[in-house]
Amino acid sequence: MRKATKKRTKARSAASSSSKRPKTKKTRQQGSRGAVIRSGTKQSAAIEILRSPGGATIAALEKATGWQSHSVRGFLAGVVKKRLKLKLESAVVEGVRVYRITSGYGSKPAETKSDSHKS
Image (tube, rainbow, N blue to C red; front, side):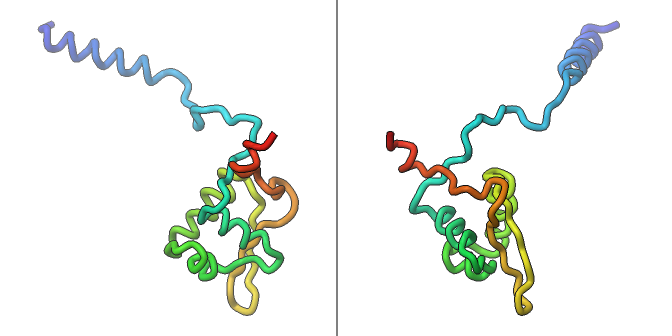
């Protein structure tokens, strides 16, 4: 066997041995603290609108935040549901879809950055 062939074989075996360790979906562990929402941000404004009894449409969230509709939908799925773990409900009211954060799991007001400094 030539030197180049040995190097390739050695590199392949090293790469395959490192890929044999179990892969986890999340690499970092989640702490016991909930996500922190800073007050005065576009996200906090959107969450306040979503917590209102009437809820909010995508158009209303676009207007309040200045985001495009695909960004609003990404915010609802990625931030509200996944990161903040808030219960988000949607319903069609008079032909328009309305989203709102409902009471229940995770709907307590999250700790704001200004609240975390008090104590």
